[in-house]
Image 1 (cartoon, one colour):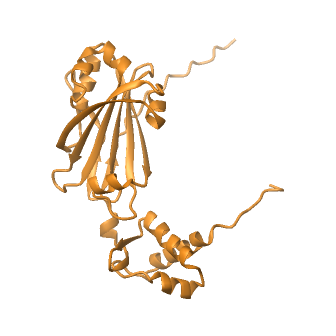
Image 2 (cartoon, one colour; image 1 turned 45 degrees about the vertical axis):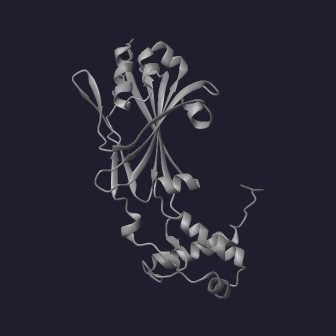
Image 3 (tube, one colour; image 1 turned 30 degrees about the vertical axis):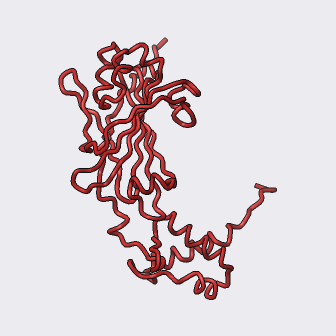
Length: 260
């Protein structure tokens, strides 16, 4: 449109794009060292901060990894393909609900009290309201890849379902079943996203340098859409992928127009 202002990308992003194209073309093979900052400065006629920011951008893209004392290495397909799959499904066995994932608990749940903030407060439609949280550390029994799990139970839900207040550290499937026993017909909505990890998350979840973490919020709702509880999963995007089984929903039939 007339009057639109088009701004060029920052120089470090242009350099990162050029290097990404070179990696895709095979100029730098998996496991090979990327040129040093000094070499990038000379080859592309850029400053050291620009070269450093370009390499950081490549790390964020998951194309390279930095090793102390060695340099920046091009990552191979075997390091970028997730080796663990977490099935985010729910099955019904008779009247009981069961989860389909095979993760095991490696650190038992720790219960605390908090106030709902940010995305969780928004998803539960209770900003600043009090809630129980329960934190666990889970792992894939075959690969050892770790996943952090946090469950949020708002106080008003726990008051109406006393079993939740008594054992907020119960397994998620048990939480679902207690809600059903309290008379709720349940449905779920999942919200996956990704972000850069903080240092504690990088260490706890064994996230490679430059790799993001997957963050997924699963909200349990009543059949009329009122949110009850929320689960938060955090895991390394380099190691783990999430799998969702999609079930088609029934669409109300359209009424035929009456002829006059």
